[in-house]
Image 1 (tube, each protein chain N blue to C red):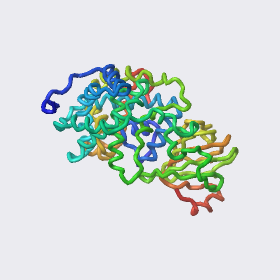
Image 2: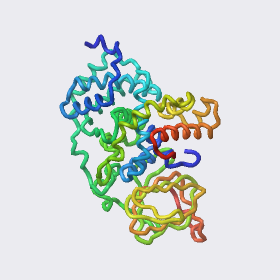
Image 3: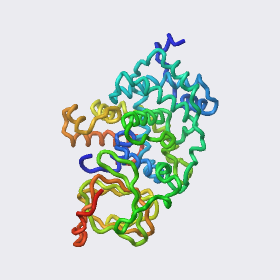
Image 4: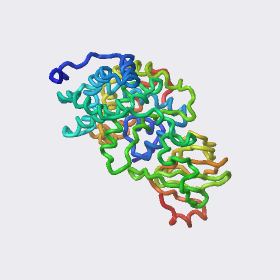
Length: 211
Length: 196
């Protein structure tokens, strides 16, 4: 992915099915958390349906309906209970990765934060859940690529202000920040390059970082 | 029976009828309603998949998979959260993505059907007006200049990077992005929303 990524790019890209898996997961999670994001997304989603309907229809094979009818004889309708499966505190798009809640994940301590990588990769992006205790901070850093952080629980502060549940923070090489958790903070974190620490101590640690 | 299919493209049905049909599928497993949906959307889903570059050898199979999912997950459709067209587009889109990412974890259909499930579920008035939105968009899109219309279609329907789109249209990359943004801002304005 080249150039700056904006929030609108993400919403539109998701509606059109163009995002790599980590970014698609990020957008779906934000849509589950943020009414404002859903409101912005509604146009792009509605547009998809309208565009589909105005497409010139392509002729299907003559036996298409018969074949479909045979196929549906063999499938069960999905149970509506699927809606309520999983830990209700986990946003639905993340439930398959944290079926018994965030606490039960195999967190690993990494510097000031705890993290767990999710098996979602694509286009050079990797996906992690990260957790910061109250008052804990990530050392001042900039970015070699794109870094997208979605707040799932709690809040953190950086030079742009306070970010809360459902807020998405997009950083790239032009952004230098030192996020600090205000309260215990859990985020979905998607990036395509390691952080670059910029503080005096941080520079010494750079060789040890990886995405 | 099959011989006359699909000689006559089905008549344009309204969103209201399509919602009713999908809800009949959900509540009564109504095959006549399901067939009406298939006759309307099936050929359009095929057209969409072909524009995405799905080959002739697999496109019919993928159309079948899409509608088997429509049949199975109809009970998860919520008219307050999506139009029928958008919902079917989403299923088709995900089936396509899954077919390309066999090596990765597939998008889970139930999750997709739950895409807008708010957490914790409040009243979802915020998207309740999707139907109105679609009506406005249907007209608004026709008022866009040909090039902008084309850009939007390519963006949604073709698996091309911004650079490839720029090359195809003979435009600088920055222009592709700004015109796409402009076109969408116009649509947003027609809906009475703030521009991006």
